[in-house]
Amino acid sequence: MKKIKKLPFIIFIALTAFFAVGVILISGGNSASANERANNDTYISCYSVLYEIGSDRKIGITEDITVNFRNRSGVYKYIPFNAGEQVRDLKVCELKNGAEKEVYYDVSIENQTVYLDIGDYNVKNGEYTYRISYDYCLTKAQEGKNVLALTPIGADWPCRIENVNIKMILPDGYIKDSALCFVNRFYEIYDKEYERTDIEYETSLSDGKTVLTAHIDLLEKGSEVRFDMSFNEGALSLYSDASAYLYLIPSIAGIALVIILKLFVFNKNHLTPVVNYEAPNRMDPLLMGKLIDGTVDDEDVTSLIYYWASLGYIKINLDDRNDPTIIRIVQNLPDSSPEHEKIMFHGLFSYGDTVKPSQLKNSFYRVVGKVKSTVNENTRGLHDKKSIIIACILTALGGIMLGLAPMITALTKITSKLLYLPAFFMLVPVFLLNIFAISIKYNSLKIKKRNTVLAGLGIALACLIVGAAYVFLLPSCILDVWQKTALFVACCPLFTLPILLITRKKEYVAKLNDIVGFKNFITLAEKDQLEIMLEEDPQFYYRILPYAQVLGVTNIWADKFKSLTVEPPQWLTGNFVTTYMEFRIMNEVISGSMKNISSGMSRPSQSGMSGGRHGGSFGGFSGGGHGGGGGGFR
Image (cartoon, rainbow, N blue to C red; front, side, top):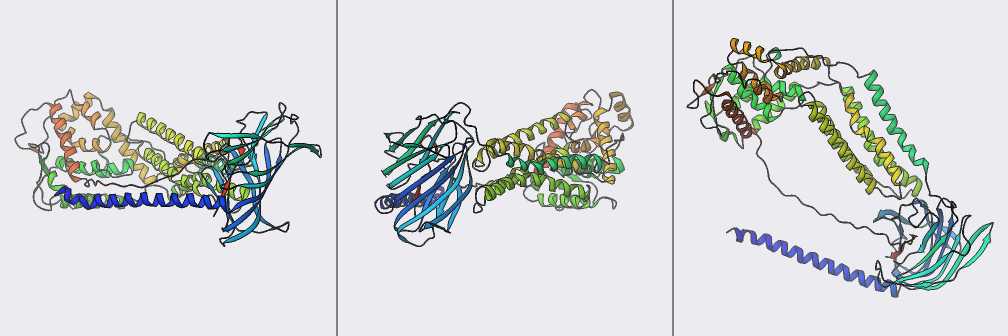
């Protein structure tokens, strides 16, 4: 039967796979035929390139591309930046009778290239000339500090290129006759096998600058033009734009503001714990669990069972340790009991005077949810709202700057047509890091200092990972490696530091002073002191146990009584009860029953499967030299 039920699903998967393969084959066929048509029909009838090279490796580039269209509508142009290049001041126009005219074009960043889509979508026939001008700034010199390797025309144009004219204006320090100019013709794009042909160039002087010019009648499909030039020691430097570091100012100002606000505005209501031998103001453990860390956990809810047992409202039968029986002794809680206790008690015994955790599964979690919401509703406003709002704003500033800086740079430095928004996704990890930091802050009164330190180190490691992803994924054509790193380092403290501004209200601090004082008693009480308390109240251990549970010190509390004589709890009933039982065994049984009861009260787990697809590629063909972007037609 199971195989029959799975058959439609298998058929669906098979049909989907078949359809996907068909789409790939069809699209591949269309792509191949498109390339053939481009090669046979549409081609570039004239390609003129001007390189004005500065000593700082900033290259002013002007490309005039004349396309002979045959039933095509536009042209693509790729500007690679896979060697750390930055693109600045990008402009595109159409040349008509020697005059520049506006033309539709779009700019995006794809696969380590600045991608230009030029021309409207009307079908064109005949020659159209487009001028593309931009500054190409080299931030690395992987070919050597005294060498420039430039590829003015790349190999990935899907057509022949006629009448190629290249002019390079060089900076001072060029070593005369050191240039090598050649054409590499690749058998397949991105293939290492190629045929190299040296070409002649002319050298002249213009305004004291060395000028190299070359002319090529025809470049076959898959051909690139390459210039390798050598310079004297120190003639070339690397491009650097210090203006990008201005983005650090808002982040640094935000950090300074956090420090000032912490020292002079929100530096108040410090904790001054007062030692308590009993729970303050007859507070139940559930409420104490909420106040100590700001959340209501399942173990906080479970603590009410043992709290009621210590008060004589219920008994617990542990004959079946995996599924203990909870027995109601009183029909209703006292009228003075908090609302959340009444909701819990009524829901627990809604079907009778006895209940087992196994009966609570898959249903009682609704009651638990109502109990939690009631406690949260009645404990609102524990923190100063102003401190929370300011902390959120300053945290958001860090994430926003990581997205805003590249967006502004792209719009103002590259082109107003490039609205780069992907970096704003950094708000997601920033938000998660902030939530983690807040969780540590709220749990600092409950968890050990060592664990707090480890959690802090975890946040630092997470920041390093997020920072590495930011530096790696943000395109280098917008900001270079050092600029991206400096920006992230400046913004990083804002992910977590603002939580220090979140201030507790005076009333909340007063309650915490009592709670922390009570916790200190549990963790620091001496053996002699506990012996006296056991003499006065033989049930003292069990009465404090639910509080130790919500304060996260159950094991510490149990260890203190290992060498003491502790009677079984009065609320325990059934065959399991004896007049004497080793404390260790009793404690293990109670601890196990707490977990089983908590498990029965929890929301049932839901299994599921989610999926998605992702894709992408890395590329940018430059044949070893800077530049070399090709293009295509549509």
